[in-house]
Image (cartoon, rainbow, N blue to C red; front, side, top):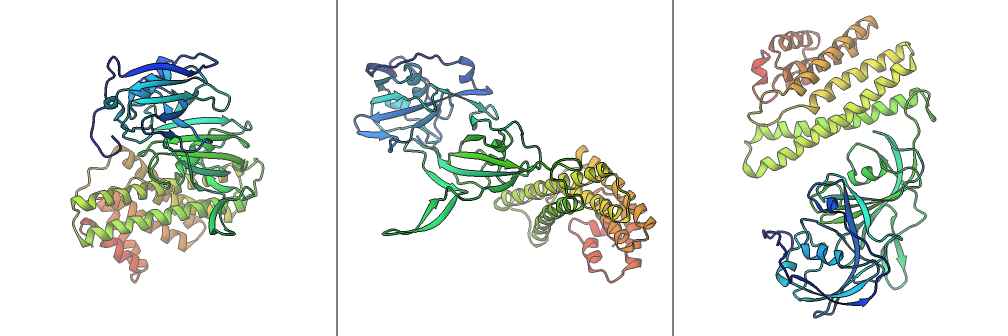
Amino acid sequence: MRAGEDVARPTLAEGDVKKEKTLQPGHQGWAAKSAYLEAKSKKRHLAYLKILAVEEKKEYPEHEDFHVALPLGDPQCSPVWTAVVQQLEIGEKAKFTLSRKALDYNPEGLAPDDYCSSWEVEMVVHKGLRVLDVEDVNEDFQQLLDIESSGGKERAEDLDNVAVHWRVRRWMPEGTFCIASSRERIAILPGYGLVPIEDQNAPPVQIAVGEGQQEAVEVIAAKVGPGGQGHLYLKSQAMKANRPAGCVIMDVEVVAMDPCRGPGTPGWKGWQNLINEREIGDQWLDEADGRRKQLETFGTLRKSTEDSKGAEAHVAEQVHKFAYNAERRYRRGLKWIEMDKKEDRKIQLEQATLRMRLAKAMSLAHMRFGENPEPAPPAEKAALKEGRQLLAEVLKVSEALNNASVRYECMKMNLQVCIQDEDVVEARKVLAQLQEERPDDEDLKSDNARPGGKANRCGG
């Protein structure tokens, strides 16, 4: 039974797993830790096997350079294989008779499930270890992390830029074949034409830890230092974004990391770093606002249906995720300004800009969507309160600096926050001030007529 079939995991009965004879003696005994086989555990045993379905004369894996990698006690794999491994010594090869009924449970397709009862299984030594002890990231067998080498002492922190090489392999009994790589290039080979290859001289790629664009890569990059390597075994439903579907193994090698974390740290370039941080935040904010507009446009054209709700929820999730990424960038930029302790006009304007964008990012990160959204939760109320406080500070600075453009942008942002905060009185007041200053501003007409009855609430 593979994915898509609703069958209960079998319970082993006496005789379901019978060791017939040893074909090759082992060289070292071992014993599984019972805690690692439980439903909840921070550690798991990962066994590496070579398997032959005798009646079918089919070998797993298909290539001698691969191994069948099976987590012991995995609820999404037949219990037959855990029982088999527990009866083997390291390096031992033995013949087993296995119950076909008990064997026919393989929802993730990680183990052989041929319809035969006679099997030969060898427990192989992998990386010099008998059975790997790996970290179960969420304690549910969905994400298993093997740190091959820890690398240098430095560890990436949130939003750090890290240079890595990565590759994705299939996780299946037939073999762990490479299906994607950061080193992938197209080459012309005689007799084959254009073919994809892995260029070992390819430069590393840059990722920002914590932004969720390549979650599996980020998990490993945060666990090892420069020169370190790790492997993340992912089930089909784990970290599905931006990776091939199905069960995969993500291999990551950390090459280097940017040591710059603000004033006083190596690589700090002052204004250049500050502007770069804000621009990254602006990119995320534009992405979030673009998704928000998609949802609101959709809401004006049609009502949600059962078919569309899933897609709408996905876009709403992107709004929140992208806005949160922007929020963290703006907060870091503001922190750097405070650390740098400079008070010139240019820095004051940049600080005002960061505060305005931060207020918008926070409001988007908590924005509710749909025809009849639930009342605002405490987290949204707290975010909007902080946003309004930030905008009040910006308004004071803009008036002190006599900067009309910053003042106007701040008021427009304040209008949006007031609308979301359902402060009708203040929203009407701000809207009237904006219309008085620039009656021809098309954005005001759009803000005044946003979906959900907000035009009426603001006195439009």
